[in-house]
Length: 407
Image (cartoon, rainbow, N blue to C red; front, side, top):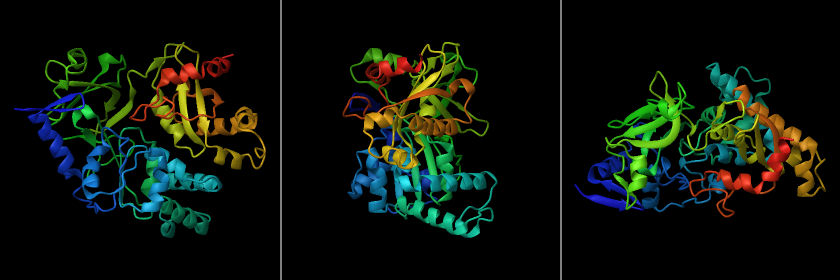
């Protein structure tokens, strides 16, 4: 047995074997071959999606480091496969202001058709009242994704089920997965033969996954614990950190929350470290709520907050182009600061958030919002390299705005 050190993580020859198998075999996707000449990789996904990066980099295709530029890249390069992380965000950013209302109607109708098992392609949709309009929007939506996408892999961030269903109806199957660098890198994945939208898929052969509900105190959602040949040996020269992450039997405590349903599919519900308790004692996992909200073209970014408070509030970075269009000219000539305080603008954004969280529990919903003009990025120190919000820093920067929401 030998050891390889990658960054600060140590892998034995056994875990390397698992790493090579998951990266190079491509077994779950042999049923849907895709030319490696047309891949659109996104290295922001440091866990699941890098599986797709190996052939991309070998082939020498363009690598997209800025996940926010993916929407423009898709339309420009016309890839056939998209191993990317923030599918929902790229989807939202690809919907222009003038098409926002039209796509909203199309998504609603398509989602209804999907749930009723009706073929939603424009030439075979019996439920549409305006076939020409739906067909035009459907064609434009396909164009926004490059027109040639045959599949999209999603990992590293939750994907709204509505967004997944909509992209699916465009003829672009979405395969969600889950993993982390410490598991080199896949733990679960959906495949053409086993796929369930809204889940992270089924566990890989040879990997054992269990849910520790003791760690969360929740009867359903617990910490995801993994053991297998893909798990690292530990963090190089960091014995204390290794002891926290790796158990005596070699099991890795991921720090992620979730549950496995009766069909064996993993549902991820948040990060244990991000979970907080409201004043009423209810626990809230903010990440899934934020992903639902970000699926709206009206929202560029959002952070949900409610630690030791009576209810949840949110800091929202609006997509100003879409917001101005929805204000029907009322926003013209106004400075950014004025628009962020505009009550009608807040009402429009609040209505979008209410719709996005309609299926959430009452205590999870957002009661008030503050519109802010600065996005969360790595450059300003508010995002990690893996695109996670640095919540403490965001709260510190906008503490006055948050306090006003509770007055």
